[in-house]
Length: 79
Image (cartoon, rainbow, N blue to C red; front, side, top):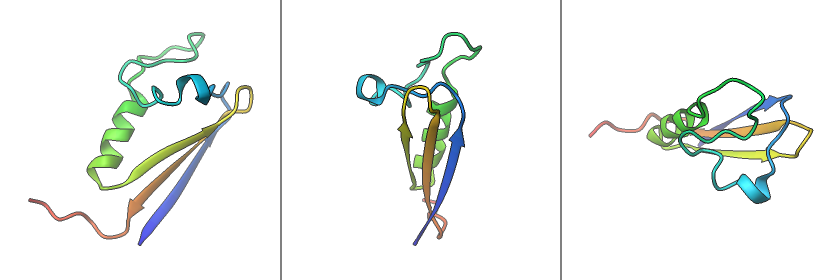
């Protein structure tokens, strides 16, 4: 079983056809009018993956973005 967490923002959105495969990359920024390092989504993706989860994004330019995080309800076993 999984739990789904939806995080919606009111930013400028991301053109996914052009940048969808880069959105979780290190140092990737798409709105240069705002301060940032382009590390946040990279770090989130790595943590979600470490917990055996997934993260996806739905976005449209001018309408913000919604991030969908799916995490297992059972904690992964430590090896």
